[in-house]
Amino acid sequence: MSAPIALCCGEPAGVGPELAIKAWQELRGSCPFVWIGDPRHLPKDAPITVLTDLTQAADLSTDALPVLTHNFASLVVPGQPEPGNAQGVVDVIRRAVSLVQDGAVSAICTAPINKKVLVDGVGFEYPGHTEYLAALAQSDHVVMMLASDQLRVVPATIHIALKDVPAALTPDLLRQTIRITAHGLKTRFAISHPRIAIAGLNPHAGEGGLMGHEELNWINDLIADLNGQYCALSGPHPADTLFHAAARARYDAAICMYHDQALIPIKTLDFDRGVNITLGLPFIRTSPDHGTAFDIAGKGIANPTSLIQALKMAQQMAANT
Image (spheres, rainbow, N blue to C red):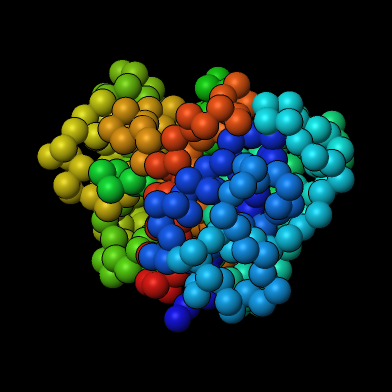
């Protein structure tokens, strides 16, 4: 039996701990995972078993959530983050990376963190999970993919202002994004001949220069040069015609030029089942596509669907590798 998935606890005052229990209740032995964190942060009377040996996780996961204990500084009150626990959150991520690099776990799934809490607690210097994981793995360039059964999208630029996108979107960035996306589709999704659609930057993909010149100046030529090197490329396509059902049937993933161009379609099509995947790491990393949700933490109403899908996708990607 393959190694279990490591589920990092994330921000313990958010919805992560209760979602871990809900995900276990749904998946049980079908998708073995081990939760790494402080057992005191899990819901009271949750069915857990504290592991001393990771190889026991699969066998024990049928009856209880396997837990790999990582002691934190403080208890938590749901919805009230404690910066004193920030070091524990960071250390759990580092511990999970060490485990996956050693082959003790097959993949990492990360529950949401809160950047402000980490900055306040330990002066966390990374924009988020992805950048920290890339640093730990010593990966020069990584790509964020949002995936569901209906659509896979990759934003070439991510968390920057819209006015800064044209300058940030360089030929080298788009080339690397295409290369890493194609490699990920082959190695993580077992798609031997990937088809990737590229969205235009401007409305109507520039409409021959009437609505912008980036497509004419370099995007068209880059796509033509790379087509067939890593995968089958098409585009640049007007983004407003790229995501209806017939269009989606013609590609395996779409690369978009900025954050909302990619995330609005997938969240509209499949809001609860979207999974955040980091491509370009030497290991598998998935995450639910939502935040810590402090406002509903501890109320028992958080929806576990995205976390369940993230765990299942990690399992499938590990099987494809």
